[in-house]
Length: 547
Image 1 (cartoon, rainbow, N blue to C red):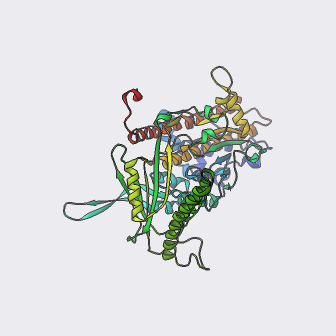
Image 2: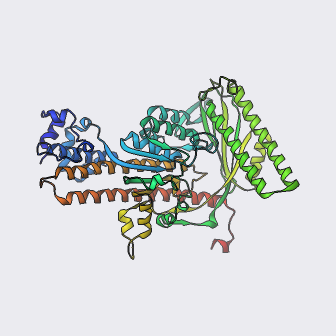
Image 3: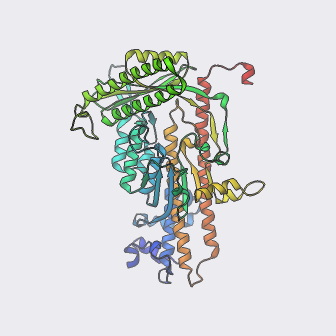
């Protein structure tokens, strides 16, 4: 009723200088002023457009017009492209800037979230840093990344799109691209952080956000605090595991091995492929690419040094006397061989690296190296594969890890869920919100479930949750602006129904619940993959044990 004329002006059908000048109200400049009667129509237009933008963000427009066809006439004016950029008054803190968290901080700022702060207890660069992860991932989330990163970062990630070489009956062959790209996690994280920095996000490294007082004692409340802190998130804060409703099956845990092979490549163009052996217990999953970026080699070098330092500390703890001397001598020999191999490769590909004119970034012309990363269950069959790889002389990093079968059935805590619990108030949930001075806590990606080494969905899952966080923050930002505007518009007047603000607050809660519901489905998909992967990895159980 109040916004019909200004809506038509936005569409270009009527003329209104206030609209064509860009009429979205800047509530941050008018918090203590009242909206006059002459401006109330602009506030209504602004509110309607914000609700429209929320529907677009969640891709719900078709459903909305199907269920509410009376509103379709507005869409026929095609005025959406005339909506000016709108400020999103919402404060989001992201704890953990791995593949999911780094994408999130970039996407949040790209969408216009006013206050975005990222925390990570690791350093920005160097050994054991947030960007030092050398593991490969076969990643199908580049469609999400395109909406979250700036153009420079996205093009870098999309360079290594996987290809399939198909041999035809006539002797010719074709190269087909797949829906996956190959990323090295540390490189992808670095690109996403650079994108976030270019957009203006505040990134704080060497900062344990769980312990840091700045997270919990800020003067202004935080709207959303997001944990992207890995598979052990539920153990980081007392009470969080119970709130996440984590279920686990320790008898199905699967020990796995990983190793990285590096050698000069015969290829002169970007190349990536996968090598998979199937068969119960005998499977392995390898990702190979031909790369030419110096940073990838330096990242391996940093990891070799970090792993060596960790191994020395472990030996000092577990051995003494002559045994310690023998073990450390063996470790030093292995370390020097691996470091020498990497330094030789680095020097042959980039001769100036160890000289006075070394550069911090750059590619290695058209000379490439093969980067092959392998995961496999830890058993005799696969240990023989690793032994064969060692005999070729290309292994530079070896490691092991356990894959847990567990699932979190909740990914969100907010004021409503913390005040409602069967049998009374959720005291633990209230305490967590108070501890982090936030209205909502969400967890994302492998904060809920373990990465899956066979299906390689861990990085993709983390990025799915990053996209979900951006959607949630955009919804909160628009609704915060409308609620703030209602308070201003009603100063000295009686134009706004008091129930409107309550309904909008309830709507924010429903968006929180939507995040939780979608998170539950994403976690279930990953949990099912991990469960099947582990059952495929473990020896057959005796009938009694299986029962």
